[in-house]
Length: 385
Image (tube, rainbow, N blue to C red):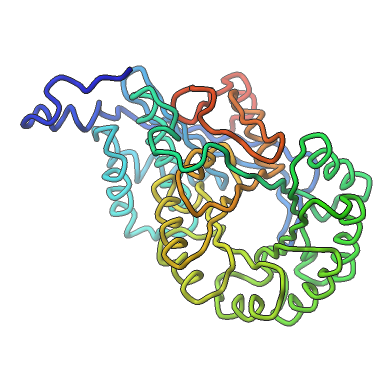
């Protein structure tokens, strides 16, 4: 059982001990994992998925964090963030988070910069938990031991045979009772094909599994309302980002007009963004992505914003990065078991979670931190920077 370092809390030396060992460095690796096939939605399909890995090192211990995005994220980490993180006590993650935010004030936080902060913040929390010898869910304190997941994929280019294989794999082989497919093809210019795919998905699934759709902001307000009404007979219960979330008043118009729950927030990078969505009544469930919203620290703040407005929160993407923090909040709805992110995380890490039955149990293995080990050979195989 971990012990408190001698002298902790007693004077200057105790203060240093309480802050933990100093962070020596941040190691950054950029990997590009080729796509299985075009994973298109309402936005252009990239030929590969790029992952920026960050390892926060203190002595012989390293914490792991990552984000999905452009290789430029790695340069933000090494150029702007590493200098303010190095030398800080590894236990004081909120202080490092605040220092990173202050350091990028002149760069602008949304997008690439917040993704960089997210990766470092995740790595620092993983490092702290590893140093103490606890699973991250135990360090944060769990509300629920099990975290519900929904399977996500069903990309627009999939033919019926491939869509059926994926849906049956999730629901019949793994027993996941809720699934999400993409609609909003070609920025909403193919509504009938969208509706046909939803109907086919329901026929494959049968009446029991929940069916979600994600338009990635591809529709106009009235178009989204028409699509939702036409999907009602197929039991679509979750309509993710029917219109762009940057316009919460338009999202509110859709929410007020449809029966399906409206969700958004995956691109949020700061509490004020989540507050705008929550306080304007734009969503039934707020989403946050730990690799975009400021990491573990940012995700906890987004969850608090949601709770203050009487909303639940759902974790978007990167399930192995956020399962532990998802278990730590009382207003969790579920976590996205994203096909592409799970595929990439399975290639790069060992110690993965098992979604069989529709839930995962972060920390159940007893392994410290996120419970993951980097597959070094695979990382070298996909490394581009």
